[in-house]
Length: 263
Image: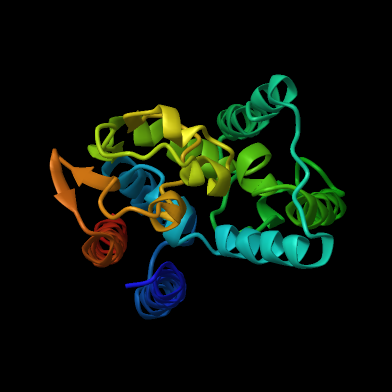
């Protein structure tokens, strides 16, 4: 299969995965009655468990905001013909911002004795703390859109709280992206195409918390089977990994909803 056909097939698969998973989330939410105070737990718990199992695979294939970022990246490249690169010495510190945002939300949630985070971007729960939260949200959205057009995956790298959560929980994941260093021709296409600017070509196992596990480097590689995912030490093809991750996500949503509904 040609690289162009791979990209088309992969794009279609991503769209289908996002549609199926998010449609099922809405179906579950509309058909299960649940105590209102447990709604956020119902959304967050399956995500955290998914992060522990599959690392940042959710960021790479299921996240709606990640999909929007890819569209913004494409638009930026289409109209500007290039991407702006932030100097590495500055970039590595900027990436800690999302962890700062995450721990700030955790601190405020504990302080106010309520969960102040929603995967579905609902901001009403912050209104008691910041009366102008909607203006702040719009400002962040505007910065993210402009940043997404100018830089690779600006929101995912620097702002996304869910990305920080998945990066930390993903440390326990047994899903690994590996490079066959003996067969690699060192063309560096994996590094050139990486949306979060990782130097994939110098790694045998991509251990960075910043890796979105988005398959971009696998598709960019001109040689087959140089890069691949391994789950509990066994190589797994990306179509099977897509199906497995979506299925597990759906099962986690069902199980969490049923359990919380009985409380």
